[in-house]
Amino acid sequence: MIAKTVEPAPEHHAAHHRMAFFRQSGWMMIAATAGGGFMYVVHMVAKQMPKGEYGVFTTLLQVVSLMAIPAAGLQMIFAQQVAAAITEEQRRVAISTFRIVLRGIFSIWLAMAITVAIFWKQALAGLQISNPAALAATVGVGLAALMMPVVLGVMQGRQNFLWLGWAAILNGAGRFIVVCVVVLLLHGWAAGAMSAVFLGMTASVVIGVWQIRDVWRMALVKVAWGEWLRRAVPLTLGFGVATFMLSADMLFAQNFFPRDQTGFYAAAGMIGRALVFFTQPLTAVMFPKIAHSTARSQKTDVLALTLGVTALAGAAVAIGCTLFPSLPLRIVYDKSFLAVATPLVPWFAWSMLPLTLSNVLINSLMARARFAAVPWLALVAIGYGVALALVGHHAGTLGDTGSGLRMMVQTLGVFNTLLFLVCAWFTWGRKIQSPKPQV
Image (cartoon, rainbow, N blue to C red; front, side, top):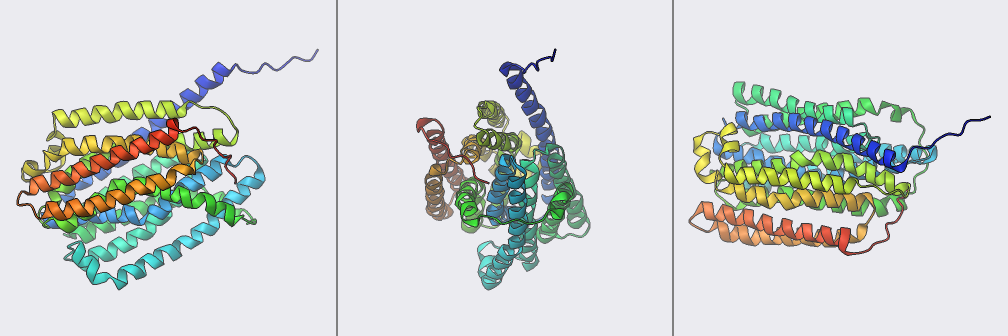
């Protein structure tokens, strides 16, 4: 008599998936905390720079984030495509697309480098950069910033969270070690610090290339580029909106406020942005799981889990920043930063909280290919850019620098809240038939 195979109960499957989610999320949180911790203490070293140079350094970090917008979208494209690849043919198409796109990354970077070269003097003046080597180093960092998320996207789609976490750790550790040498010993200031950023990102790229080394041996197959672009463009715009909302304010502050004041804004902003970075590992785990479940037409509660944990963690951090606003600053900065930066910390924390929740919902929408939300998300980002220009121009003319900087943060909070409401509407308020992702 042949024994019948007993299928595990659905409750067992659900419990197993929840345990895997929390285990993987826990590791990614540890890795992100370690990597983010190294990047945090980078500022303990960077504060040794003159405040004007520190303001330039933090601004250039946001420039790199904006330069990486195309690749940030590509990371999620490949994470979705690889996660949704069920058959061997689909996997070969995904890898072929990755290898061909990676070749185009250099062309994108070259176009950016040429653009910077054409507007070299204007960029130096607009960002108040005294040492041109800092801008040159930033252009070099741009290449690593474009390559890193594309390579890590394949790792994320494969749910290789172990090495994805180590890539985050070594990125931060490499940046910290090098910045100690170039700033403390060689007095490289902003230019030297940006070289440290380049080496840290390069370490992540090397890890990623090693982990996906099997893809270089696969034979290329034909790719339906029309279909791929129909997904790539909205995904890039969707994730680009989140990056723009996170990074754009520093560029406007650097342009409209005195060079010796932007370091204070950068210090408070670094605390607020840390809230977003701290919760991003949860979405990194969530995205491929939703994409994979969508491809198989399976239900999953991973969105509810991610959103709940993110909301609780984000609210706890924001409350802590409200009760003890100077504490995170004192860990990194000396007393000269406290008078101007401390009042901005609670504003930044609460302004960034809706962005952390929006990131979760944007990842969910993009993983399910609900691209109808993208034009509205882009509209919020455009409105935010216009508002920053208007508020920055007005705030920069005020005699009270503290009030002007607070107006910039408040503008950030208003538009991040608007972004969350748009994301919430397309997630729950509007019934959408999610198309099955094509690979």
